[in-house]
Length: 77
Image 1 (cartoon, rainbow, N blue to C red):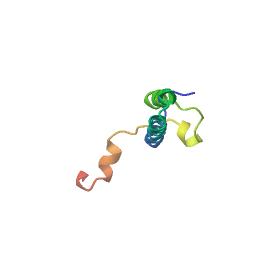
Image 2: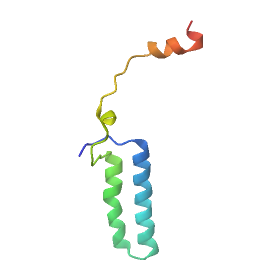
Image 3: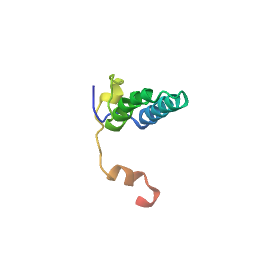
Image 4: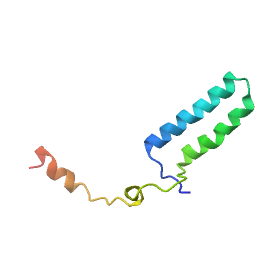
């Protein structure tokens, strides 16, 4: 389990899952089911990754600095 390592699309999917759980709980008048949405909410806010990603996801990105982007800009000459 790795903290603060999920992508934005995973965060959005967990938000949709949380809202679906809450909607099912409210529409079925079983409000105790809404408690299940709490771990989904906390896992999305803490960015918990439950399974390892691909090898590309686990590599650390190297920041090359701002000069790389300046060379590609047409006004940089």
